[in-house]
Image (tube, rainbow, N blue to C red; front, side):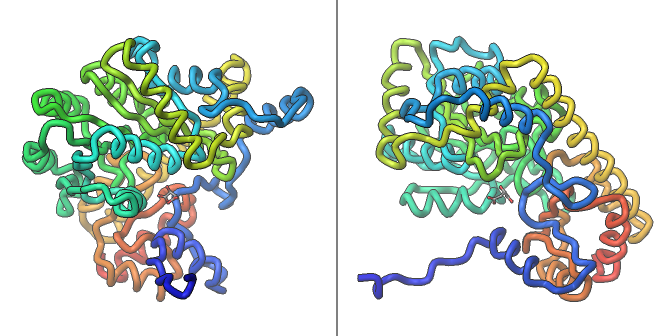
Amino acid sequence: MLTQLKDQPADKILALVQAFKDDPRKDKIDLGVGVYKDADGKTPIMRAVKKAEKQLWEQEQTKSYVALTGDPAYGAAMAQMVLGDAVPMDRVSKAATPGGTGAVRQGFELVQLANPQATVWVSDPTWPNHLTILKHLGIKTTLYRYFDSETCAVDFDSMLADLKGAKEGDVVLLHGCCHNPTGANLNKAQWKELVALMKAQGLIPMIDIAYQGFGDGLEDDAAATRLVASELPETIIAASCSKNFGIYRERTGILMTVSAEAATQKTAQGTLAYLNRQNYSFPPDHGARLVTMILNDPDLRKEWEDELEEVREGLLVLRKQLAEELQKATNSDRYGFIAEHRGMFSRLGVSPEMVEKLREDHAIYMVGDSRINIAGLNKDTVPILAKAIATVGG
Ligand code: LMR
């Protein structure tokens, strides 16, 4: 039987991680996978996380199972962080999942269970794993235009024009903030227009929010998700704690659904429990427990929010510096968008050939579509990158 297996296509982002590791050049620069790095290239354990871990080690009495959808206190804390008071909590169902990817996967399975006829509309481009999971599950998928590769901003008119082709009950996958891979995001007015369109056409929003706190701040980054959830009858939300708590390997995410009425919430909650049971039974608890402790303890929370804010501001400084250095190096304003983009990533809009040349000649690694991880830079490598981009003709 195993001889029947075919080689699966490699995940491009993860393949890049390996290629970078294998590169012997000392001055190599990794702008690939979406992992935060400080100025020394380290991915630190956040201060509040370390403290919570110590407390947990001292206090935890058992490693027995918790619950199929995780600790309800985790669900409550996360629902509060993402949704605030946008919707009554008796309409919200929650299930802890292994990371944001687990939440996305469970969300798609929920769609399949609820409405096998639904098409999932996905931004072009999107996080590649969205597309491969959808394909793996056999869910009908259509791309909507999103990114204007000339201006490197959102092509909002085309986005709306494409979504007008969606039928009632179709699902629109949206990035709550910090669009991955482009870094280009809708403004407030555009979100309102999009909400109106989804409402008029009876579309179901599914929001993937994996970078809350990396764009305009913890609250501002949740504003679009809150608007959508408060205006539309039903919303599906997949959230990740990997990046904003820096607990990547703990696999900490959550799938939430907002039902139209409190009366139907119980069935949605039961479905989330069912899906967890079928796929992996109990979700991981360690990361979720740390998140709960941090969100519910005012001192730990403040320490975490402060550090997250330092990270966010650091990214903005790097964005500004890179836009300026590129202006100098290329003698043009065409990279000004980098300072406008938000989150960990920007898509530079240079050709795949240039991306390859940057890797081969300059040991600079970015995803093939020219997505860079801003956090992979520091103030010394920014001018190196800018010069290299100009050298390869960008
Ligand atoms: C990324 O886009 O680089 C991250 O979300 C990490 C991943 O799993 O791909």
